[in-house]
Amino acid sequence: MKDFFRRYWVKALFFFSVVGPGIISANADNDAGGITTYSVVGAHFGTKMLWVLLLITFSLAITQEMGVRIGLVTRQGLGGLIREHFGVRWTAFAMLALLVANLGTITAEFAGIAASFSIFDIGKYWSVPLAALSVWFVLYKGSFKTTQKIFLIFSAFYIVYIINGFIVEPDFVQAAKDMVTPTIEWTAPFLLTMIALIGTTITPWGQFFIQSYVVDKGLNIKHYRAEKGEVFLGAFITDIVSFFIIISTAATLYKHGVRIENAADAALALRPLAGDMAQYLFAFGLFSASMLGAFILPVATAYAFCEAFGWESGFNTTWENGKTFYSIILIAIILPALIVLIPKVSLIKIMVWSQDINGILLPFILIFVMKIINNKKIMGEHVNKLVGNIISWATIIGIIIATITLVVASFAGVF
Image 1 (tube, rainbow, N blue to C red):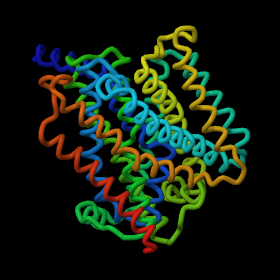
Image 2 (image 1 turned 135 degrees about the vertical axis):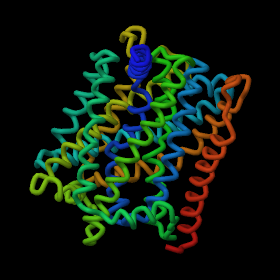
Image 3 (image 1 turned 60 degrees about the vertical axis):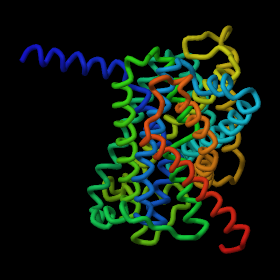
């Protein structure tokens, strides 16, 4: 019995020693754009899109696991592998797609920060610059371990949505039916929101980030089983939160015909849990989620570009030998913050539209991942199995079809 517990604790300690990449990367999907998109999904369409959430939960787990596996086997980031095996032109294309997606998402994070402080009647011209300075200070001055702890602490907030989901007493039977019964409305708002739902759950930056993270953390293939378990756990946790956000807003806002135009509208979904404090609880949650993304996205962007073009990167570098790495982080903080400071810009639209951009650009990044993960010269015996290929290609094709349908229908004047 003593040996059994000893082995159990050794395995547990080993798991927690490598924990971080899977859970952080997955939970970061529930950022400002994520919370806002899931809230809009529930408030505007009820539980009709839960079947999409169920499918992309599997897709999220599989695609994140592929990123981890590539990182553990090659000890390289995705950007560097694309340059090495596809050449400079394709690398430039991939980096351009990533840059557009990431800047849009980082802008959404600062929009989320501005929206959260607006509930307290604090203007964005105060909140956004202060948040930007805080993010830069922590990333530049803080150690890798300190930054990781901050990421994990912010991730813990999402429990409030699960609690609220039970308090509002939603129709779980109907939710279960909608989860296994595909429903599509051939309208622009529905298709755009569906693409945003996919784009906020499986992100282009997530593929680069998780792969670079395991490399920067010093992990290798011997950690694969623990990391695989963590990735699957992270995907499950993040979409459990997403599920409860959707059913909470469906049971409160959609039921009463309330559409989300600002952060105060979205906060109404938490009234059953917090009463008159709902707005303040939502503000804290939106701020926490926004800061989580604001910490991670500039880093993910810097990692990807430095690896793609062979520049020094990582939190263990100094300004002298990692000047490009930190400069990219700085630019990725300043530019999105300035966009949010544009007068009269719609914060809610920024947060949702950024996820549409993610969804549209995602297939391009996933195709590179699929080419790499199935290359035996790169992955050896760790190439993809049939199930992984089926789920991944189904995700890619599904997003492409949804995007083409939206574009064609829009030009045809159907809507």
